[in-house]
Image (tube, rainbow over all chains, first blue to last red; front, side):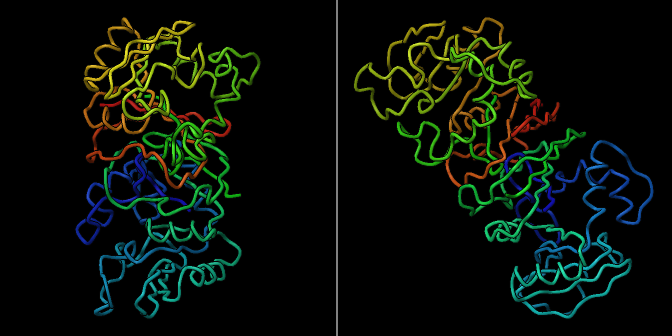
Length: 208
Length: 208
């Protein structure tokens, strides 16, 4: 799990949808991240900055072999897919460059994109998505990317091994709340390290 | 403002009261702090540890001249004071060693304790408590100590200058939630520094 959270616990603003992929105000969660060279490279762009966040992100990205995400992280379409026209927020060459498993209640065939990304739509639950993602990753790590609803389900089910939180200096006030619906000490956390970076603090936890 | 918060946003567990001054499970918020020599000294005890949290805490304590807290941080008594017998959680020599302003709806005369602590009960609201605390502090800083309800009121009113959060590797799941009832970007935060310490991350924000 690797996500950016506001200090008040939100990973997206309210009214998430086509106009606001990260909810209203949620784009500020990316202020530490979007200017970095490593972010721009993932998105096929040149230039960008290098700062104390760079090695943190590079360490995470270096081991990834697959991603799991919720349907709203893939797009704004709700309910049954009307057609195949929505192909993700990212254009034809998404920044993942590996298989991505999208949790949804509505079946859809896989989407082969450019640059190594393929979207697979999983309708039989979080455990199935994890099994498929692990198999696709072939021994590399599976990134649990978001949003809050999917991540909270994985946390409650005890299926998360490692949590890398980027804590943004931001109060969102409302939106998608992470760590909701959990029992006390579920999961149990051990702090591994914290990194002070420009405009963000990275804290890594091992789940024990 | 200087408080310890669980990763899921709580500064105390549920069912706070005489049996559980920090709510059920809330004592785990102090696991980084209670073993430190600087904590033990405040409480008139010997020994204790020195670690990366020590300079963070010492820097905060060095400038304090008064404290503001909510009534539940002072004690478990609810409603009108039945008598003067409750004198705080801490015995006759509390760890503050300066004037403490306790917000309550129920008037009570001041309490002079040993070691420089005096409790003053303020019934005319958060702005009055701040004015009195600033005057008592005589140019030194006022510590907004907690709990969540009082701190959230000060945050919403724009009366907090600096936030020093200790983020504990802990999921509480329920209890007293910090940063609730706020509007987006109220307050606006600028991250000043983060410190990786054993069992906790300290993040300091300037309110701008």
